[in-house]
Length: 240
Image (cartoon, rainbow, N blue to C red; front, side, top):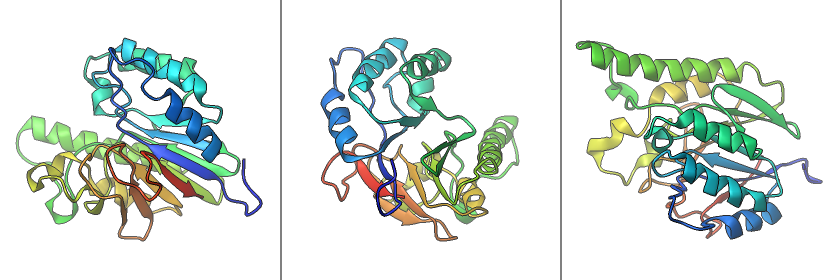
């Protein structure tokens, strides 16, 4: 719930990579987060191989979470082709799984898409050449369009954008330059900057940087579990 200062405390973490041979990997962490925040945001790669069993383990751990949970899927959650089952298991556990939608929690709009690859700035991949390249660019553009459509659903003054892929290069710095095009796309940032956005959270880049801004000034946070954060904990804690 919003506090006396009118702000909502949002805990955000991504890239949990839950494996099917791990018992209760995040139960204690979720219980801790419930005491520290009003909302938990999960930024994809919730499972390691996209297996329903992995999603079931995560769903069981989320029983320890006493606050609303908002999430998007990541590329790992698609690995086995069971993403619909994974999503259904998480939704049954109470997770508000976003895939081109917006929801309101205590006056804050949460907008989520997975995002996609494509590169950044002048080095974004263009729709030219082989059909496979054109299909990749079309998917990247489609995710940006779906994000825009979701943003148009927000009616509150404050909005948090939830992604898996990065919208800016600053928060993937530290990763090998060769893989930058596979870590996100500036098309997401271009969409975000058409709207008033309080914060953007994403994961995917395990060796990236914690904080950056879109060209329009929206704050962006890489909340992958592996990234060092000001909290000193695996999750970021933002006031929105």
